[in-house]
Image (cartoon, rainbow, N blue to C red):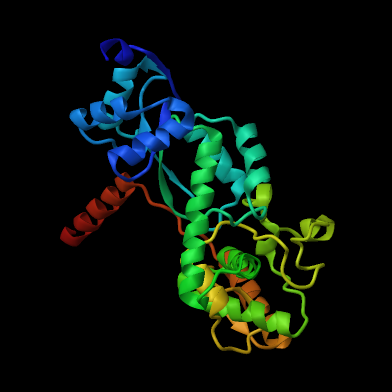
Length: 325
């Protein structure tokens, strides 16, 4: 037995350990080509209990005993990675590569291979990922975690999960995510999208052009004219066949349950912190002109000159001197 425990084990640095009994875990690892048996089962039971989840073994070559010992003592080295609502996979995969020291080209290659849609496959959230995970393991974890959350949401709302139907709502939610100024506005923006679709109107929304690598690009008249993709809702009717970005739960809830309204248009308000909604193009033009006038007036107002603190003290001294004269 002593000789057996000195045998060499080659492993990945970070491995996944499922929840379950020691016997179940040993059986699972044996199927993963670790060649474990009842002896390993007994040794692990003496040492303690295996950690579940992704664990960092700190090495890829060790003896059998070291491997079994690390199964009971190793913990994952976690790295915090946040996918912001409204961000695209194009930038998120680059963030993953940088924070987890992974290959960017490999992540993009695997994403194209396994993602259901071009975007919206990973829910906007904060993830704690172990350092040392391979590109495939990271993507599988993120995609499967999001898929399970989508299934849970869908079954709670509809009682079932139809992936094609669900991703139609994800696509609408991604447009809402890009266009809304706040969570409170989401259901109203959703109503505009649904109302325009019902009337066979083009959505004509800038947010749909902030897809992929254009996530942070300012949409200009030139971009609208030259973009020939499916995301150009100024040229194409309906919604794109792919989501525009990552979404949060509030956005998909708004996509499924839009506010009841007759709104067909909206634009940023004077302060730029919310939107003005309207039911007719005439009213929409009035809102545009109001904001333009406000900007023009604000721009023409002379800026207040900053007075240096030293100058302020001198002025105060002069005023005090005048009081006594």
